[in-house]
Image (cartoon, rainbow over all chains, first blue to last red):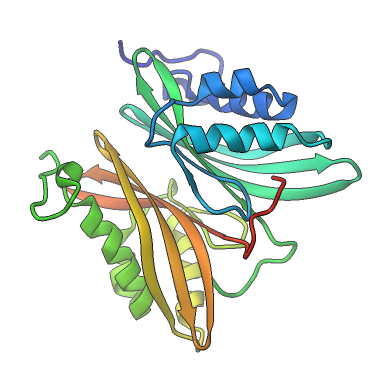
Length: 140
Length: 140
């Protein structure tokens, strides 16, 4: 079954990818490990990079990272801005600014998230978050 | 025309995406703005995040960032490790550790790069580089 378009959103041909994208942040904010697990494909090809972390490959490593993050005491609140989705066939990649409120502190993380359509639904296959410096750096 | 497989590489169904991926780093290392420009699709949908920078959207902004980076005095040398490509239809995303040597200094950047196949070739549509901390952080 091909991805079906969603109605009522500004990217009507995303076939539900925006909903999957939002569900990722809902699970993150709620620290809901089951919901996070349901979003990801459970195979060796998935990749996850948390800000400052080395790349994690494969669902076992990715799952362990979420368990570790959700086991902390601080709650994160996400305000998503500049959310952009691009879909080509069975792949959707999204970029977004995660404006994160953690207690009295705030920070911005830019993320690139990749979803793949198979078996009638979108699966998260890559999350790559990187910290945005308070002032843009000059070099790579 | 569909992407043709390349011979002699370990991901024979990538249809040349690995070559495009390598060409990106060759252009980066050579500070070759023309070669870099040739790799990217010149439209509003492309995205580029340099480590610590805010997200750049659209070819004009992305091009300006490469001109700025290549205009610096320091040369970067890239040693690529853990290069992994995933292709689904006309999209290929690649993760790689960029081990960067800059003068007497070294740093590691993890990158997620996205390529789209159209008009008989691969186009770079997203580059997202994030610094890997010397020791993994505990939180997002």
